[in-house]
Image (tube, rainbow, N blue to C red; front, side):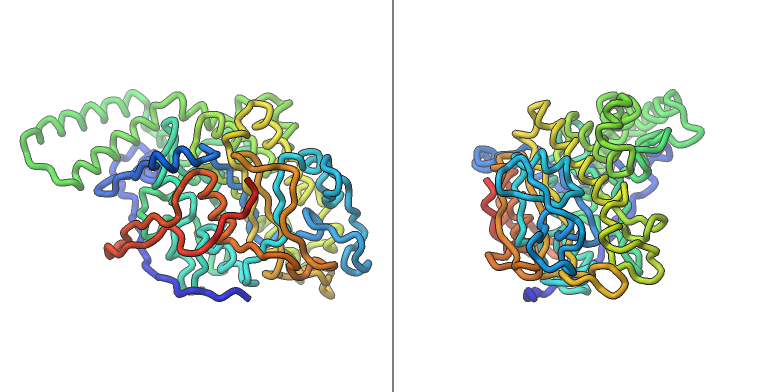
Length: 461
Protein backbone atom coordinates (compact mmCIF):
# COMPACT_ATOMS: atom_id res chain seq x y z
CA UNK A 1 0.00 0.00 0.00
CA UNK A 2 1.45 3.35 -1.00
CA UNK A 3 2.20 5.91 1.66
CA UNK A 4 -0.14 8.86 1.61
CA UNK A 5 1.08 12.40 2.04
CA UNK A 6 -0.87 15.05 3.98
CA UNK A 7 -3.54 16.79 1.95
CA UNK A 8 -4.47 20.45 2.12
CA UNK A 9 -8.15 21.04 2.53
CA UNK A 10 -8.74 24.52 1.19
CA UNK A 11 -12.39 24.53 0.19
CA UNK A 12 -13.00 27.31 -2.25
CA UNK A 13 -15.85 27.81 -4.62
CA UNK A 14 -15.84 30.91 -6.79
CA UNK A 15 -19.53 31.12 -7.48
CA UNK A 16 -20.08 32.16 -11.06
CA UNK A 17 -21.98 35.34 -10.55
CA UNK A 18 -24.88 36.11 -12.76
CA UNK A 19 -22.85 38.78 -14.54
CA UNK A 20 -24.74 38.39 -17.79
CA UNK A 21 -28.26 37.08 -17.93
CA UNK A 22 -27.92 35.70 -21.45
CA UNK A 23 -25.88 32.57 -20.60
CA UNK A 24 -22.36 31.59 -21.45
CA UNK A 25 -20.64 33.26 -18.51
CA UNK A 26 -19.91 29.95 -16.82
CA UNK A 27 -18.20 28.82 -19.98
CA UNK A 28 -16.05 31.93 -20.11
CA UNK A 29 -15.14 31.84 -16.44
CA UNK A 30 -14.14 28.19 -16.71
CA UNK A 31 -12.07 28.76 -19.80
CA UNK A 32 -10.15 31.98 -19.22
CA UNK A 33 -8.23 33.61 -16.40
CA UNK A 34 -9.78 36.68 -14.86
CA UNK A 35 -9.22 39.12 -12.05
CA UNK A 36 -5.59 39.00 -10.88
CA UNK A 37 -4.61 35.50 -12.08
CA UNK A 38 -2.66 35.91 -15.31
CA UNK A 39 -1.83 32.88 -17.42
CA UNK A 40 1.73 31.63 -17.33
CA UNK A 41 3.14 30.99 -20.76
CA UNK A 42 5.26 27.96 -21.52
CA UNK A 43 8.99 28.58 -21.30
CA UNK A 44 11.02 28.39 -24.50
CA UNK A 45 12.82 25.34 -23.09
CA UNK A 46 9.51 23.57 -22.40
CA UNK A 47 8.34 24.37 -25.90
CA UNK A 48 11.48 22.81 -27.37
CA UNK A 49 11.16 19.67 -25.27
CA UNK A 50 7.43 19.12 -25.75
CA UNK A 51 6.39 16.25 -28.00
CA UNK A 52 2.66 17.09 -27.87
CA UNK A 53 0.60 20.25 -28.26
CA UNK A 54 -2.75 18.74 -27.29
CA UNK A 55 -3.97 16.13 -24.84
CA UNK A 56 -6.90 13.72 -25.05
CA UNK A 57 -7.67 12.22 -21.65
CA UNK A 58 -9.82 9.08 -21.76
CA UNK A 59 -11.16 8.77 -18.22
CA UNK A 60 -13.01 5.62 -17.13
CA UNK A 61 -13.68 6.00 -13.40
CA UNK A 62 -14.86 3.00 -11.46
CA UNK A 63 -11.95 0.59 -11.78
CA UNK A 64 -11.82 -1.16 -15.18
CA UNK A 65 -10.85 -4.83 -15.09
CA UNK A 66 -7.34 -5.39 -16.43
CA UNK A 67 -7.78 -9.16 -16.71
CA UNK A 68 -10.49 -8.80 -19.36
CA UNK A 69 -8.82 -5.92 -21.22
CA UNK A 70 -5.07 -5.21 -21.53
CA UNK A 71 -3.56 -7.86 -19.25
CA UNK A 72 -5.21 -11.23 -19.96
CA UNK A 73 -3.81 -14.28 -18.20
CA UNK A 74 -4.37 -17.24 -20.53
CA UNK A 75 -2.02 -19.44 -18.50
CA UNK A 76 -3.77 -18.75 -15.19
CA UNK A 77 -6.17 -21.24 -13.60
CA UNK A 78 -9.68 -21.32 -15.02
CA UNK A 79 -11.15 -19.60 -11.98
CA UNK A 80 -8.88 -16.59 -12.69
CA UNK A 81 -8.84 -16.35 -16.47
CA UNK A 82 -12.38 -17.48 -17.18
CA UNK A 83 -13.72 -18.16 -20.67
CA UNK A 84 -12.62 -14.83 -22.22
CA UNK A 85 -9.68 -15.62 -24.49
CA UNK A 86 -6.52 -13.67 -25.26
CA UNK A 87 -6.11 -12.58 -28.89
CA UNK A 88 -3.08 -11.52 -30.89
CA UNK A 89 -2.61 -7.84 -31.68
CA UNK A 90 -0.86 -6.35 -34.70
CA UNK A 91 2.35 -6.40 -32.64
CA UNK A 92 3.88 -9.88 -32.30
CA UNK A 93 4.01 -11.05 -28.72
CA UNK A 94 1.42 -8.62 -27.37
CA UNK A 95 -2.04 -10.00 -26.62
CA UNK A 96 -5.23 -8.30 -25.43
CA UNK A 97 -8.51 -9.80 -24.28
CA UNK A 98 -10.86 -10.87 -27.05
CA UNK A 99 -13.31 -8.05 -26.25
CA UNK A 100 -10.76 -5.52 -27.62
CA UNK A 101 -10.38 -6.54 -31.27
CA UNK A 102 -10.33 -2.95 -32.62
CA UNK A 103 -7.63 -1.79 -30.21
CA UNK A 104 -5.71 -4.98 -30.95
CA UNK A 105 -5.40 -3.68 -34.51
CA UNK A 106 -4.10 -0.36 -33.15
CA UNK A 107 -1.56 -1.88 -30.73
CA UNK A 108 1.35 -0.61 -32.81
CA UNK A 109 0.31 2.89 -31.72
CA UNK A 110 -0.12 2.08 -28.01
CA UNK A 111 2.26 1.99 -25.06
CA UNK A 112 0.44 -0.16 -22.51
CA UNK A 113 1.42 0.04 -18.84
CA UNK A 114 0.57 -3.22 -17.07
CA UNK A 115 2.21 -2.41 -13.74
CA UNK A 116 0.07 0.59 -12.86
CA UNK A 117 -1.02 0.67 -9.20
CA UNK A 118 -2.71 3.39 -7.16
CA UNK A 119 -2.07 1.78 -3.77
CA UNK A 120 -5.65 2.33 -2.65
CA UNK A 121 -8.93 0.43 -3.00
CA UNK A 122 -11.04 3.53 -2.42
CA UNK A 123 -12.83 5.12 -5.39
CA UNK A 124 -12.61 8.68 -4.05
CA UNK A 125 -8.93 8.46 -3.17
CA UNK A 126 -7.98 6.65 -6.35
CA UNK A 127 -9.86 9.01 -8.62
CA UNK A 128 -8.54 12.13 -6.89
CA UNK A 129 -5.01 10.72 -7.14
CA UNK A 130 -5.37 9.92 -10.85
CA UNK A 131 -6.96 13.28 -11.69
CA UNK A 132 -4.35 15.32 -9.83
CA UNK A 133 -1.21 13.19 -9.68
CA UNK A 134 -1.10 14.00 -5.96
CA UNK A 135 -1.47 11.31 -3.31
CA UNK A 136 -3.65 12.98 -0.71
CA UNK A 137 -5.47 12.10 2.47
CA UNK A 138 -9.13 11.05 2.18
CA UNK A 139 -10.25 14.35 3.69
CA UNK A 140 -8.59 16.31 0.91
CA UNK A 141 -10.08 14.84 -2.25
CA UNK A 142 -11.16 18.30 -3.43
CA UNK A 143 -8.01 20.10 -2.31
CA UNK A 144 -5.82 19.52 -5.39
CA UNK A 145 -6.30 20.73 -8.98
CA UNK A 146 -6.81 18.31 -11.85
CA UNK A 147 -3.70 17.97 -13.98
CA UNK A 148 -5.70 19.38 -16.88
CA UNK A 149 -6.08 22.60 -14.88
CA UNK A 150 -2.31 22.86 -14.49
CA UNK A 151 -1.79 22.30 -18.22
CA UNK A 152 -4.31 25.04 -18.96
CA UNK A 153 -2.58 27.35 -16.48
CA UNK A 154 0.91 26.72 -17.82
CA UNK A 155 0.28 26.51 -21.55
CA UNK A 156 -2.88 28.52 -22.01
CA UNK A 157 -5.91 27.87 -24.16
CA UNK A 158 -5.74 27.34 -27.92
CA UNK A 159 -7.79 28.28 -30.95
CA UNK A 160 -10.29 30.37 -29.00
CA UNK A 161 -11.55 27.30 -27.13
CA UNK A 162 -11.57 26.77 -23.35
CA UNK A 163 -8.26 25.44 -22.07
CA UNK A 164 -9.78 22.33 -20.44
CA UNK A 165 -12.96 20.76 -21.80
CA UNK A 166 -14.70 17.76 -20.22
CA UNK A 167 -17.14 15.73 -22.32
CA UNK A 168 -19.51 15.70 -20.55
CA UNK A 169 -17.85 16.12 -17.13
CA UNK A 170 -20.89 14.79 -15.29
CA UNK A 171 -19.29 12.00 -13.23
CA UNK A 172 -20.26 12.34 -9.57
CA UNK A 173 -19.01 9.37 -7.52
CA UNK A 174 -20.63 8.81 -4.19
CA UNK A 175 -22.42 8.90 -1.93
CA UNK A 176 -21.95 11.71 -1.19
CA UNK A 177 -22.11 12.54 -4.89
CA UNK A 178 -19.05 14.66 -5.52
CA UNK A 179 -17.64 16.65 -8.42
CA UNK A 180 -13.94 15.78 -8.64
CA UNK A 181 -13.27 17.99 -11.68
CA UNK A 182 -11.85 20.86 -9.66
CA UNK A 183 -9.18 23.56 -10.03
CA UNK A 184 -9.00 23.85 -6.21
CA UNK A 185 -6.44 26.45 -5.07
CA UNK A 186 -5.36 27.15 -8.65
CA UNK A 187 -8.50 29.23 -9.15
CA UNK A 188 -11.92 28.74 -10.65
CA UNK A 189 -10.80 30.35 -13.90
CA UNK A 190 -8.94 27.11 -14.63
CA UNK A 191 -11.93 24.83 -14.00
CA UNK A 192 -12.96 22.66 -16.94
CA UNK A 193 -15.83 23.55 -19.20
CA UNK A 194 -18.15 20.57 -18.61
CA UNK A 195 -20.38 20.21 -21.64
CA UNK A 196 -22.94 18.10 -19.74
CA UNK A 197 -25.66 16.51 -21.86
CA UNK A 198 -25.15 13.64 -24.28
CA UNK A 199 -23.55 14.15 -27.71
CA UNK A 200 -25.50 11.11 -28.93
CA UNK A 201 -28.82 12.86 -28.20
CA UNK A 202 -30.63 14.71 -30.96
CA UNK A 203 -30.42 18.42 -30.33
CA UNK A 204 -27.31 18.15 -28.14
CA UNK A 205 -26.13 21.58 -27.04
CA UNK A 206 -23.31 22.53 -24.72
CA UNK A 207 -24.55 23.94 -21.46
CA UNK A 208 -23.92 27.71 -21.24
CA UNK A 209 -22.85 27.95 -24.89
CA UNK A 210 -26.30 28.80 -26.17
CA UNK A 211 -28.45 31.80 -25.40
CA UNK A 212 -31.08 31.34 -22.73
CA UNK A 213 -34.75 31.38 -23.62
CA UNK A 214 -36.02 34.80 -24.54
CA UNK A 215 -32.63 36.23 -25.54
CA UNK A 216 -32.12 36.53 -29.27
CA UNK A 217 -28.80 37.38 -30.95
CA UNK A 218 -30.18 40.88 -31.57
CA UNK A 219 -30.96 41.31 -27.89
CA UNK A 220 -27.47 40.08 -27.03
CA UNK A 221 -26.02 42.73 -29.33
CA UNK A 222 -28.15 45.44 -27.68
CA UNK A 223 -26.91 44.38 -24.26
CA UNK A 224 -23.35 44.43 -25.48
CA UNK A 225 -23.85 47.96 -26.79
CA UNK A 226 -25.36 49.05 -23.49
CA UNK A 227 -22.42 47.60 -21.61
CA UNK A 228 -20.01 49.50 -23.83
CA UNK A 229 -21.88 52.74 -23.15
CA UNK A 230 -21.66 52.18 -19.40
CA UNK A 231 -17.95 51.49 -19.69
CA UNK A 232 -17.46 54.68 -21.67
CA UNK A 233 -18.94 56.67 -18.79
CA UNK A 234 -16.33 55.13 -16.47
CA UNK A 235 -13.46 56.46 -18.58
CA UNK A 236 -11.17 58.57 -16.47
CA UNK A 237 -12.18 56.85 -13.25
CA UNK A 238 -9.65 54.73 -11.46
CA UNK A 239 -10.64 51.16 -12.05
CA UNK A 240 -9.60 48.28 -9.83
CA UNK A 241 -8.11 45.03 -11.09
CA UNK A 242 -11.37 43.32 -10.16
CA UNK A 243 -13.35 45.60 -12.50
CA UNK A 244 -10.84 45.00 -15.26
CA UNK A 245 -11.16 41.26 -14.67
CA UNK A 246 -14.94 41.44 -14.90
CA UNK A 247 -14.60 43.34 -18.17
CA UNK A 248 -12.38 40.59 -19.55
CA UNK A 249 -14.94 38.05 -18.44
CA UNK A 250 -17.69 39.91 -20.28
CA UNK A 251 -15.58 40.13 -23.39
CA UNK A 252 -14.64 36.45 -23.37
CA UNK A 253 -18.23 35.40 -22.82
CA UNK A 254 -19.38 37.44 -25.81
CA UNK A 255 -16.50 36.10 -27.91
CA UNK A 256 -17.44 32.50 -27.15
CA UNK A 257 -21.14 33.06 -27.73
CA UNK A 258 -20.53 34.71 -31.08
CA UNK A 259 -17.61 32.62 -32.38
CA UNK A 260 -18.53 30.44 -35.39
CA UNK A 261 -15.32 28.45 -34.82
CA UNK A 262 -16.32 27.53 -31.26
CA UNK A 263 -19.86 26.65 -32.25
CA UNK A 264 -18.67 24.53 -35.16
CA UNK A 265 -16.28 22.60 -32.90
CA UNK A 266 -19.21 21.39 -30.78
CA UNK A 267 -21.56 20.78 -33.74
CA UNK A 268 -21.48 16.99 -33.66
CA UNK A 269 -24.73 16.91 -35.66
CA UNK A 270 -22.64 17.75 -38.73
CA UNK A 271 -20.95 14.36 -38.61
CA UNK A 272 -21.98 11.83 -41.23
CA UNK A 273 -23.85 8.63 -40.34
CA UNK A 274 -20.73 6.72 -41.40
CA UNK A 275 -18.60 8.60 -38.88
CA UNK A 276 -21.13 7.98 -36.12
CA UNK A 277 -21.20 4.29 -36.97
CA UNK A 278 -17.39 4.06 -36.95
CA UNK A 279 -17.31 5.27 -33.34
CA UNK A 280 -20.41 3.35 -32.33
CA UNK A 281 -23.88 4.63 -31.46
CA UNK A 282 -23.09 4.40 -27.78
CA UNK A 283 -22.49 7.14 -25.28
CA UNK A 284 -18.73 6.52 -25.26
CA UNK A 285 -18.70 6.38 -29.06
CA UNK A 286 -20.40 9.71 -29.58
CA UNK A 287 -18.41 11.37 -26.81
CA UNK A 288 -15.18 10.28 -28.50
CA UNK A 289 -16.49 11.60 -31.80
CA UNK A 290 -17.04 15.01 -30.20
CA UNK A 291 -13.55 14.81 -28.68
CA UNK A 292 -12.14 14.31 -32.16
CA UNK A 293 -13.96 17.43 -33.40
CA UNK A 294 -12.57 19.47 -30.51
CA UNK A 295 -9.03 18.26 -31.16
CA UNK A 296 -9.40 19.10 -34.84
CA UNK A 297 -10.54 22.58 -33.82
CA UNK A 298 -7.34 22.99 -31.81
CA UNK A 299 -8.45 22.47 -28.19
CA UNK A 300 -5.57 22.21 -25.72
CA UNK A 301 -6.91 19.57 -23.30
CA UNK A 302 -10.03 17.46 -23.80
CA UNK A 303 -11.30 14.84 -21.38
CA UNK A 304 -13.65 12.06 -22.41
CA UNK A 305 -15.39 11.37 -19.11
CA UNK A 306 -17.13 7.99 -19.29
CA UNK A 307 -19.07 8.68 -16.12
CA UNK A 308 -21.31 6.41 -14.16
CA UNK A 309 -24.37 4.56 -15.43
CA UNK A 310 -26.89 4.82 -12.64
CA UNK A 311 -29.60 3.59 -14.97
CA UNK A 312 -27.53 0.86 -16.66
CA UNK A 313 -26.00 -1.58 -14.19
CA UNK A 314 -25.13 1.23 -11.74
CA UNK A 315 -21.43 2.13 -12.18
CA UNK A 316 -20.59 0.21 -15.33
CA UNK A 317 -16.97 -0.48 -14.34
CA UNK A 318 -17.45 -1.27 -10.66
CA UNK A 319 -18.17 -4.90 -11.40
CA UNK A 320 -18.73 -6.43 -7.99
CA UNK A 321 -21.96 -8.01 -9.24
CA UNK A 322 -23.27 -7.16 -5.80
CA UNK A 323 -26.96 -7.27 -4.90
CA UNK A 324 -28.59 -4.13 -6.22
CA UNK A 325 -26.18 -3.72 -9.13
CA UNK A 326 -28.19 -6.12 -11.27
CA UNK A 327 -25.09 -7.18 -13.20
CA UNK A 328 -24.52 -10.51 -14.89
CA UNK A 329 -21.39 -12.55 -14.14
CA UNK A 330 -18.14 -10.69 -14.79
CA UNK A 331 -17.33 -12.70 -17.87
CA UNK A 332 -20.74 -11.97 -19.36
CA UNK A 333 -20.65 -8.33 -18.27
CA UNK A 334 -17.47 -7.73 -20.24
CA UNK A 335 -19.30 -8.71 -23.42
CA UNK A 336 -22.27 -6.41 -22.89
CA UNK A 337 -22.22 -4.25 -26.08
CA UNK A 338 -21.79 -0.93 -24.27
CA UNK A 339 -19.20 -2.28 -21.81
CA UNK A 340 -15.66 -3.02 -23.07
CA UNK A 341 -16.78 -3.63 -26.67
CA UNK A 342 -18.08 -0.05 -26.91
CA UNK A 343 -14.90 1.38 -25.39
CA UNK A 344 -12.81 -0.73 -27.76
CA UNK A 345 -14.64 0.54 -30.84
CA UNK A 346 -14.69 4.19 -29.75
CA UNK A 347 -11.07 4.44 -28.58
CA UNK A 348 -9.77 2.65 -31.67
CA UNK A 349 -11.80 4.91 -33.98
CA UNK A 350 -10.47 8.03 -32.27
CA UNK A 351 -6.86 6.90 -32.46
CA UNK A 352 -7.31 5.82 -36.08
CA UNK A 353 -8.86 9.13 -37.13
CA UNK A 354 -6.15 11.15 -35.39
CA UNK A 355 -3.51 9.04 -37.13
CA UNK A 356 -5.16 9.37 -40.54
CA UNK A 357 -5.38 13.15 -40.19
CA UNK A 358 -1.77 13.43 -39.05
CA UNK A 359 -2.77 14.88 -35.68
CA UNK A 360 -1.77 11.89 -33.57
CA UNK A 361 1.90 12.82 -33.89
CA UNK A 362 1.35 15.96 -31.78
CA UNK A 363 -1.66 14.82 -29.74
CA UNK A 364 -1.08 12.74 -26.61
CA UNK A 365 -3.87 10.25 -25.95
CA UNK A 366 -3.92 8.83 -22.44
CA UNK A 367 -6.30 6.31 -20.87
CA UNK A 368 -6.64 6.14 -17.07
CA UNK A 369 -8.82 4.32 -14.59
CA UNK A 370 -8.21 4.50 -10.83
CA UNK A 371 -7.38 0.82 -10.18
CA UNK A 372 -7.82 -2.72 -11.47
CA UNK A 373 -9.96 -5.60 -10.22
CA UNK A 374 -9.20 -8.59 -8.03
CA UNK A 375 -7.75 -11.75 -9.57
CA UNK A 376 -10.35 -13.82 -7.76
CA UNK A 377 -13.98 -13.84 -8.79
CA UNK A 378 -16.12 -13.11 -5.74
CA UNK A 379 -19.12 -15.31 -4.72
CA UNK A 380 -21.47 -13.04 -6.68
CA UNK A 381 -19.53 -13.49 -9.91
CA UNK A 382 -17.71 -10.14 -9.90
CA UNK A 383 -14.26 -8.74 -9.29
CA UNK A 384 -13.67 -6.30 -6.43
CA UNK A 385 -11.45 -3.22 -6.03
CA UNK A 386 -7.74 -3.89 -6.45
CA UNK A 387 -5.22 -1.09 -5.95
CA UNK A 388 -2.15 -3.32 -6.38
CA UNK A 389 -2.24 -3.60 -10.16
CA UNK A 390 -4.07 -2.35 -13.24
CA UNK A 391 -3.55 -1.22 -16.83
CA UNK A 392 -3.44 2.15 -18.59
CA UNK A 393 -2.09 3.23 -21.98
CA UNK A 394 -0.63 6.16 -23.94
CA UNK A 395 -0.60 6.87 -27.66
CA UNK A 396 0.59 9.66 -29.95
CA UNK A 397 2.38 12.79 -28.84
CA UNK A 398 5.86 11.32 -29.14
CA UNK A 399 4.96 7.99 -27.54
CA UNK A 400 6.68 4.91 -28.97
CA UNK A 401 3.85 2.57 -29.84
CA UNK A 402 3.84 -1.19 -29.97
CA UNK A 403 5.25 -1.71 -26.49
CA UNK A 404 4.18 -3.02 -23.09
CA UNK A 405 5.86 -1.70 -19.96
CA UNK A 406 5.68 -3.62 -16.72
CA UNK A 407 4.16 -6.98 -15.90
CA UNK A 408 2.01 -8.57 -13.26
CA UNK A 409 2.30 -12.04 -11.77
CA UNK A 410 0.65 -15.15 -13.20
CA UNK A 411 -2.80 -14.23 -11.87
CA UNK A 412 -2.62 -10.47 -12.44
CA UNK A 413 -2.52 -9.75 -8.74
CA UNK A 414 0.75 -8.00 -8.00
CA UNK A 415 3.32 -6.18 -10.10
CA UNK A 416 6.48 -8.22 -10.58
CA UNK A 417 8.31 -5.32 -12.24
CA UNK A 418 8.55 -1.66 -11.29
CA UNK A 419 5.20 -0.25 -10.18
CA UNK A 420 4.05 2.99 -11.79
CA UNK A 421 1.79 5.19 -9.69
CA UNK A 422 -0.79 7.83 -10.71
CA UNK A 423 1.87 10.43 -9.89
CA UNK A 424 4.15 8.79 -12.47
CA UNK A 425 1.31 8.57 -14.97
CA UNK A 426 0.56 12.29 -14.66
CA UNK A 427 4.27 13.20 -14.75
CA UNK A 428 4.36 11.42 -18.12
CA UNK A 429 1.68 13.76 -19.45
CA UNK A 430 3.56 16.82 -18.17
CA UNK A 431 6.72 15.61 -19.90
CA UNK A 432 4.90 15.19 -23.21
CA UNK A 433 3.47 18.72 -23.22
CA UNK A 434 6.61 20.36 -21.83
CA UNK A 435 5.29 21.41 -18.41
CA UNK A 436 7.99 21.51 -15.73
CA UNK A 437 6.43 19.79 -12.68
CA UNK A 438 8.91 21.54 -10.39
CA UNK A 439 7.42 24.93 -11.24
CA UNK A 440 6.03 26.52 -8.08
CA UNK A 441 2.81 28.49 -7.96
CA UNK A 442 1.29 30.46 -5.07
CA UNK A 443 -1.68 28.88 -3.33
CA UNK A 444 -4.46 31.00 -1.83
CA UNK A 445 -2.30 31.87 1.15
CA UNK A 446 0.58 32.84 -1.11
CA UNK A 447 2.65 29.78 -0.26
CA UNK A 448 4.75 28.32 -3.09
CA UNK A 449 3.41 24.94 -4.19
CA UNK A 450 5.09 22.77 -6.82
CA UNK A 451 2.90 21.60 -9.68
CA UNK A 452 3.92 18.08 -8.73
CA UNK A 453 6.02 17.05 -5.75
CA UNK A 454 6.39 13.35 -6.59
CA UNK A 455 6.31 11.22 -9.70
CA UNK A 456 8.69 10.23 -12.47
CA UNK A 457 7.74 10.06 -16.16
CA UNK A 458 7.15 6.54 -17.44
CA UNK A 459 9.64 5.82 -20.27
CA UNK A 460 7.12 5.54 -23.08
CA UNK A 461 8.83 8.05 -25.40
